Length: 153
Image: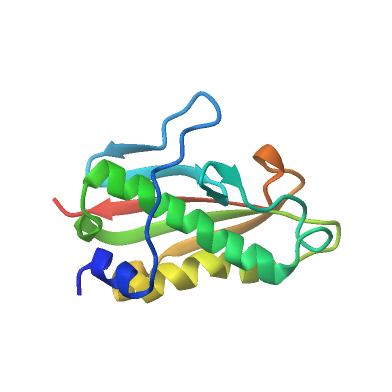
């Protein structure tokens, strides 16, 4: 099944790729790789959740925010490639979690992105990953996701 058909069957419509909030581009293609800049949980131009996980934001809500981040990253891929089936392999995903002191379940939060990509792409969605706790993220976001994707030659 084509990836966009699979998204449709999940009742998911990708929005437009988010505009950068500073001096960078959403993604860069070099050789057969796309480096996607960090994506926040933004929908319809608005940050959907603010705060630190383990304080203002629950782990469950942060998991869903990570999924929204990865949907925004897919929007960047769609914008750059025109076709999400041109992805050969998800290589690396890095998740940053704005964490309250003592919160140590960053991997569980970032699973919101990882598990979605694997469910969508199967084996091509398997990836290396880091889940990092940080003090603050842009705009007060609880989660930010960036990734490296290999594209078909």
